[in-house]
Length: 122
Length: 459
Image (cartoon, rainbow over all chains, first blue to last red; front, side, top):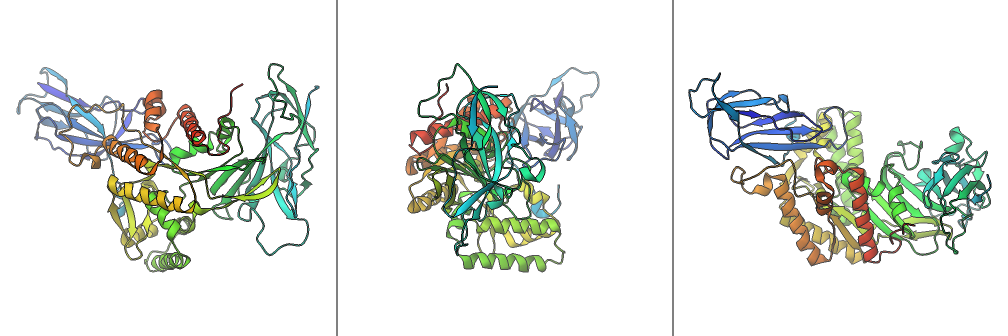
């Protein structure tokens, strides 16, 4: 069975999120509880803002499956509802035409420390 | 229109003439105004009436940002007197007119449904005084009421019949809206109370007022400050990268912040009773969100620097290079923060009896769906934001019992109102949420008997 991980709509008025950190690679087998990625959501992303309202979230897997297709890379921006990754319950299962459903996952707000100290800017 | 003529009423300071600008109206001609609502304001200044003394004059660091607001004592429809507003610089500079008690700003046709208290004279306007201390003399913005770049802003009742109680708010963004309100001029706070209150707000330009930093501010000697200033000058010159204008602004603001002794400040007041002085504050408002789990500490001189990450991110390369090489990151656990806060409270109360109010943090998020905590590394307070804030809120409960602090329960208020709509990122509140938190602060201050903060009664 194919399991599609889509970007959840975390904040009502903001549909865009930036992929901050990916913890997985294609071909990896994921078990429940494994980290998939961290997201950055900036409510002020449309305009420069003092004290920017930025939130970070982690998505952790609640299924079992092989990561067959990773649709994002670090730094990418995606809209809510777009595919982030495709998993399959069998390692060599065809990626087209088979039965499928949405992957189960957990979302949690996380503490993020910026890396201004390495002088790499944004 | 027939109505009550609204006069400025007496205002005098021994040894000084009070001058004023033209009137800038906040309410339109013909507009309905509620009692205690500000209808207009002007800039004022004190000019020696005799020989200039040796002592610095009152408001010496606020003299160019000194304003008085006028509120009616009754509700009704307002009519401006002609010639009150002179336009242009004559409504900004205070040099052209003297304060005259009988000057009539306008008239009000009182609301017939409203009872006027017998002790109130509706002909004399209620005064509110505003003073801002510029972050730099260059920060010359006089276009409105309490606008401009101030490193300390304050307001107090100008009626002056009783001693003023002082609330000092040392805060980050979440306190700004609660204390200063929608128009940044304390208007909502003033409308919520009826006594002779004095409200002071010190913003986070540039440092965040965390307990360790405030404590160091209190204890830092002039010699230690000079050493910090000399070290910064030496460091910036030795970087090999020419500092840009923003670098100088950054370190200038930093030095100004480190030099402040905010918690020990005394304050000049001008009221209808004349000049007086008050302070330090009767109550101090802080926030647990000012207590970051990671701070910077200067490697050689040992002083703390707490600052928003986004300010570091926005800094120019020279300052970032200096911060990277001269400071180390220090992690603070909730227990370390508790000890810092406890030491701060004790140090403040050694100097004067002071109520301490601390806003707690929003400990839940509607954007989470955690069924199982096994995916998250230990200690979870290092990873999960809501977990960390729960730990901090619990620490605050312990500290509250230990030091008799007052907790402003933002967590409960936001949850009650609906955090998704009113606190979408867990930090920046909606207007209704700010109003609820403001009312809670007023309620807590009144319950502890801080003078001037009795809630206004709704008629």
